[in-house]
Image 1 (tube, rainbow, N blue to C red):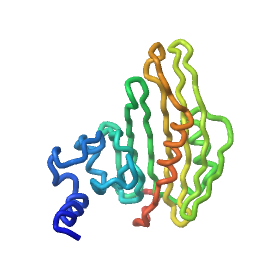
Image 2 (image 1 turned 90 degrees about the horizontal axis):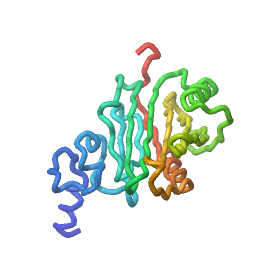
Image 3 (image 1 turned 180 degrees about the vertical axis):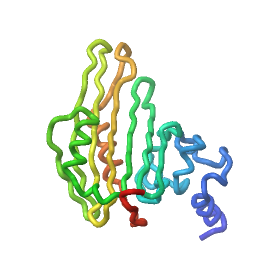
Image 4 (image 1 turned 45 degrees about the horizontal axis):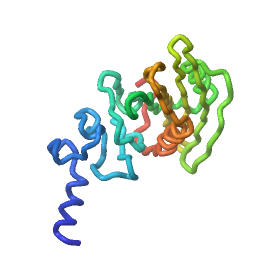
Length: 215
């Protein structure tokens, strides 16, 4: 490898906080000081996505280049709980968000309890589709809600993601909508659902210290 190539690789692996804004990728995720604290590297994992690492170090996932985390809605408790809220604009009149809660508690194994909690949170009364992976089980559903007075529809995609070999779990809610119903809006619902599923399926749980339920 040439010296230039080695230097490029070293820069990619540097902690992003050590780089100046000019050295960072010119995307929303890295230009926000709070968000880039959670991004492992300036190297894309796949086109348009970087690697997010939980503050608990309990999981990683893909993070969209155009999204930013909200420091106002961030919360963490030791290794047992973390909540993040990310949002992004697409074009001039579409925005999406993801509300993600990480749990490391023994009662997360009570699947029906947590599916009922998800139903209550999003106002959903239906069933969940089960999607199985080697390391996790995803319980997935979706809904749409119309606001006729605003000529606006919010599309929600949500899941309960349970690690198969630990008590770790994630509650994941993704929502997208046209911001102004009176303005032109080319929202592709299928593409939005694919993005939501891409983020959910990218969740990789990291074995971590077992927390007591009273922590």
